[in-house]
Image (cartoon, rainbow, N blue to C red):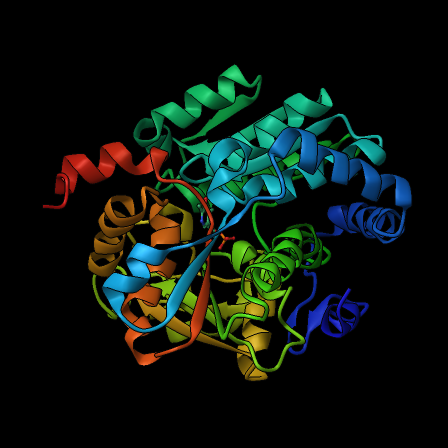
Length: 400
Ligand SMILES: *Cc1c(COP(=O)(O)O)cnc(C)c1O
């Protein structure tokens, strides 16, 4: 582990001013148990070996880095490289932490994984882990999302998960979180909550970062092997922030490497039109931890909007708030229009159809490459675009 990772967060789960754990009393003992289990297992050679085996023989790791030569030539300036997390089993980086959460649950003697899902990507990844480990799986999903994301609902059911429809309020992600949490409180003696990003109460932001750090470890080695050095800039899209923390953690002690988080600007910088929490948010609490949040006039989490449903969150992982405050990571944005352009361009120029989330990082690289003559940019291609094909072609055609 690197110097930074060894010392951050502190024992109470704080990344500087951010993080921590504000828990309802019935959950306190269960989180004490999770922290103790992780503290022990993260140092256990047997656990690490088992995770390594799963990554190699089930997930398809290591994933390669691709040099995007055609895109680089078109943009004129920096050479652009992509870490290919789209090549993970189930199509995105999410399986990196879902398989590890499943393994943790198994070692804790739990028999069930519970979570919420928005567009269904996290639900599919967690249901995959549950099937692999022979566990029950319960995924809470808003009724609006169930209607919109039918293929992912089908996948979860085929994988053996129970999909619980949530009909309260706006019937989307926020209500699904509340519903899943309530169900978890009732079952915490035999279930583990499988959080989907570097968010939630301590130890989840740290644990999910550590589980994703394989992306950064591989990338640092692979990039050096390909080019003989380190990238000048490393960039990734930020929703909750797990794919970004995974990649960043491999370079965080390398002062020469600039780190950039790319947030969704949606249709404009007006509150309600975007989900750029790091750029426009303020300090506050959400879902049991301190971070930056987008708040409305009443101080409630604001509505958010982006073409990429996986980035649709009015909060962000606490470590990002910290890394911004200490000046280690810069945060920028890409809007829906640039993102769609990047989606079509990467498909046509490189033969890679990216997830709309990942296309935000591609859009940033396409915009900045000309300002970085002679330099190199490594982006995280967090997932593939299969899930977005219908939406993109039905609403925007083929991009001619
Ligand atoms: C869920 C998702 C994201 C956003 O989550 P992070 O925790 O910010 O990484 C990004 N890309 C893809 C492909 C996703 O499925």
